[in-house]
Amino acid sequence: MCYCPHRKTLQRIQFVFRGSEMLRATSNITISGEDCGTKVGKVINVNKDNYKHLVGFNLITDDSTVFIKDDDQASQYLGLVVKKRSMMYCVSKGNSFCKTCAGFNLANNPFAASMAAAEYGSAFLSMFLKSMHGKTLATKKLDIQTAIT
Image 1 (tube, helix red, strand yellow):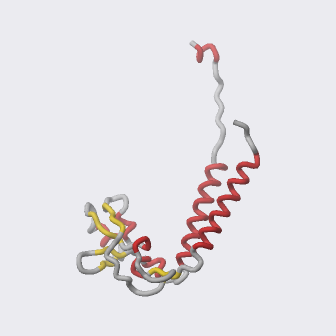
Image 2 (cartoon, one colour):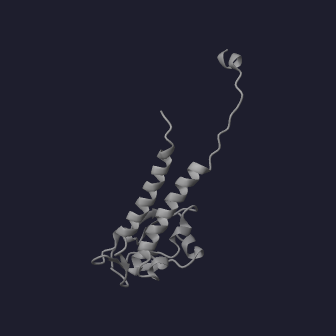
Image 3 (cartoon, one colour):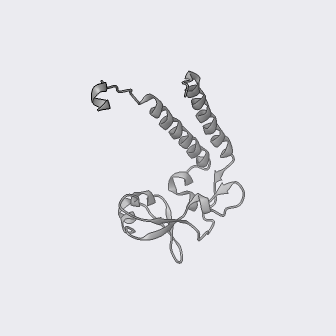
């Protein structure tokens, strides 16, 4: 396999381009409306590793939704399987999502979906750059006689 010094540069350009594609694709999406009323959600088996991810979101119960406001309230669901409201299952009309499905952090800004997409694009680019620039080449002396026998 030959080494092409421009290959890494092309990969960086592709990541930047993908990030701008995500931003364009989400630029018309808005967060508006209080509740679409969906009863479908992301099924999550709550454990000690993921229960804090429920904070700021709504869970679907038999007759309503429950907003999880802090870690203590989220810890009550440890060991249970819950349905979390998610933008994946929002049934709002047009290019919008309801505030209930979007969660507290995104619901406060009507154009937050586009900002979140840009943040994901930046995170992927950062991860890629760290994988390229964060590596060092380590060498070790090899004794041929010991290696062969």
